[in-house]
Image 1 (cartoon, one colour):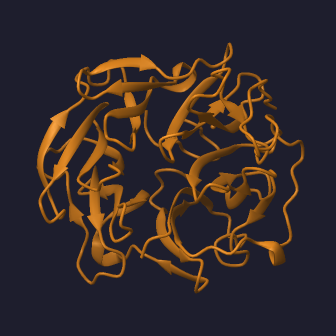
Image 2: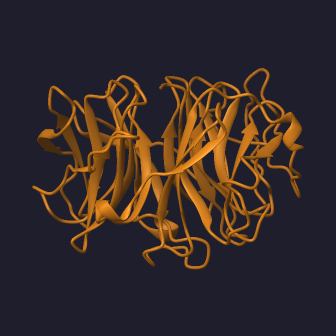
Length: 335
């Protein structure tokens, strides 16, 4: 599973209502039909920063990477010609907010890089030594490891003491492209790894115990549906994207550990008739995500988990009507 081209050719990083238990204080399960945006004057006050990428079409060389500071309302393009990296995308903050890992093409190959926003230094290529196609990087919650997709498998990189390089690599899966694994995400304890298995309509989310390498399917979608892009907020809250057959629309679901029915909940912040995906947890109340409900391309919005209200992020800056798709966001409150 590769990163999903959007919005025309949907190949890889998608009106749905699920009868599900709802945690106290959360909006009732189910998307909102023809969702409308809240006025900019009521946008929530946020202290942190958001990293994301935008492109005209996937893989066309137009991808750029940006950082938005909510406190200063400043938007900064991170990549530059000096990097010699084409299509930088899918950046993720380290737990302390000081570094990002991201993927991009260098020398014709997809690699994973690490960089400190604002640094005059060039990004460090973390996968130069292992070669192959490298994608979907994520930090562990303690910041000591990264996990990536490598040639259709998953690998964990143990970072050096200073965190600047990978000291060693561990193979998590070893079947190559025969069964494609992608989009890995650590659990907070580092005990488990959540990831997507398969491609297209066969995509399912699995969870592996890293001590035993025993893997089990995490969620069972309805007939004809598929699921991908698992995101872990904390010990209790997990998000993923479900795409249903027929409409083909993406909906963001939340799974709460210990919930009575065991069924995931479709969030009211979803627009039923459009695509909503790439969940980026902000805090206990808010979720950033990408949606094509409000523009001709994917725009970045923030939704309230309890009320289902949705706001456009930084109109005139991030969402400026420039015809570019804004995707793969990640938020940190750390500086």
